[in-house]
Length: 492
Image (cartoon, rainbow, N blue to C red; front, side):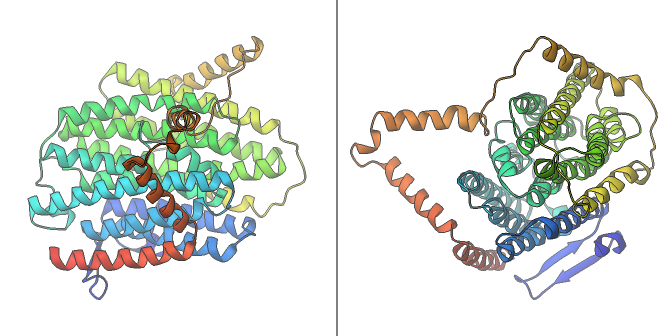
């Protein structure tokens, strides 16, 4: 945290002895990501000190590994170094997700790791393509590529991490199953690693792609589905995870606009940075707060904290959310797109009302103050963000309209006694993949002749069995570092 605060913009660092050399550069983008990333990790670590009582050594090992990857990728200046830290963060998070060792945690971790492997493969192919086309590994050297195929690889690889619509099914499973201190960093800052990846790897200002740009805008708008599906959940952390899918849709839309109009890239990137910092502080705080509510119920202190973070996510006046969304909307010219983005705010408000309703059902008992202190730290960070952005904002009716619309819908549903059906976590994965698997079992397909699909399933189950033992994961990471060092040697 101290490094993030005091390192000056423009600083250069080189570690020549590690993997044939890694270079770091702190530009404005790196500085912003370093600040909110290290702050959220610090508050989550302080919360974990008070709440983690089982397998502490294992938790802190994976917590540190994941933090190291997340922190390093914020200011590394070459693509292979980014790939190293991104992989370290992604694979390290597996240990955090599976920490509870419950059936749900194991299933969520194995779903997560499969998405990670696909994303890592796509990113590796994209990096090889970029380096071969541009002849360099520094970020400023890979902006020459105008290949649509490479751009799509980059969009998919980091889209998995962001939780883009249709690539998001791992997210609610992982975030709901991990300990609260891990969920806070998973949603608060690790999703933003995908955002940073898009910023670093997208060829801004070289050639816009209408196909990719319009696709991102459509996928960003469809992310509202995540919020709507979240209304069918009855667990606080699952509801917050689906809210993150909906919220990150704003960022996806902005990236689509950048691809369509590169002249606005500077304005839109500033909006993306502001929104990322806002979402990191408020969403991580809500994940930590949800854990306290699940344990002790909703008292006055938690109500006040929840109200602040929820209203900020909705974007009510004088909050960090209002400032971030005003910056976001300043780069959008289409009135139709603005209306759809406002609909996302209505869905967010409905989710927060559902969160409050579920919280009130939990029996209230006496709770300690100490675990609330890190959440209060995030409250101060969110409170200060509008002034850090040098924009205190003002009052606009359009900022409060989504909240009152959601409140009207909520009251109507309650008065009419309309119950929203409960749906499984994982939505698309649960609704389409799992029923198909059950259908296969009922038809006894597994008892038929040996075929490639059965062999592939056996391989995956062997991998899963190995991954369930942490020593194998650690050996895999060491082997992975060796592989990257050899790769760097040949590319240089």
